[in-house]
Image (cartoon, rainbow, N blue to C red; front, side, top):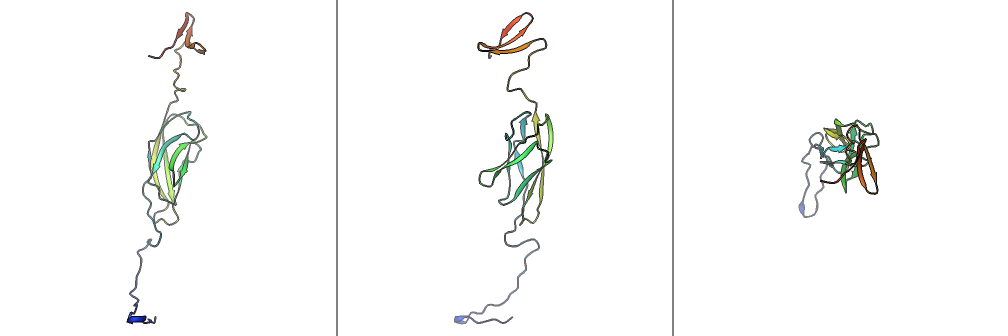
Length: 157
């Protein structure tokens, strides 16, 4: 390689340079994704936020496994990302999920972050189930439990 002297006598020399494997312009390393909180009630409407996902690298894509419709990833890099209730109903209990992050310039893509979500039993909108032998009624005067002996007005304690 020939070197050309520049004005004022400055000469650039080829000193050699090599990058470590996997490094280079625009390279990123993906970290763990954190879901917090991670709990929702069975029967919650689709789109209800289960928890906020933190630790996402800008420009990456997040997916969730199992991809069975019970949960979904929603959001964007500006507003933030969340795990939300999907269109498929979920049974109460502890359910494992894996958040998977991919990035075209990451040295460790894809990166998986296992976690779990707790699905609590549905409470029916806060209305208790009536005891056996009772019927629950709501009319313009209030809410009642009725049985063979009469009606009982429900009042807040």
